[in-house]
Length: 239
Ligand SMILES: [Zn+2]
Image (cartoon, rainbow, N blue to C red):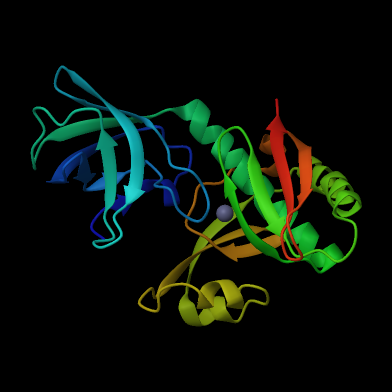
């Protein structure tokens, strides 16, 4: 991967300068980017690239399966070539909601695991809402509504979210992180750690808010029983 992922150091960076280093049939590869591609169950950013007088719409951001490159899918590639300087700008409203919902997802999975011994089995975060499946013994409606209250209690504590890097060996010593770290590609020597002290710690590459208070109110929208290991929750954050 050649692209420097600026959002991993600063999730609040909305505008950045970059250089086009490659073109695909419908997009560009940049030397660095603040755009988060769809990954880790979190939806992609959208926004704009500016070059000279032109404005390009960033419609999608994906990781190319074969090359591992981050591709910014644009409405047009006209006038862009390797070496072109661009300014990138995120659709911040969308991104900030993704950050709030994604951080809420960490708290929910921590509550579900520590209080109800329930493991997340899948899920996705979109700007308007998130959904996750859990392995729950018993009545999912009751468990999820109690968990939602506990998530709101934690949010209100105003906990600073810490981001730091650890080498693989050190990271593997942290209880609870091992299963996640083991899922990562073996060639990664340094893991990005996202810690909500006293609540959750994970190896994770995505954007998060700096303080739990920014999440706002966690709102349970709906629950569904989709099978033994697939008790689903839909939730959002307000306002
Ligand atoms: Zn995360």
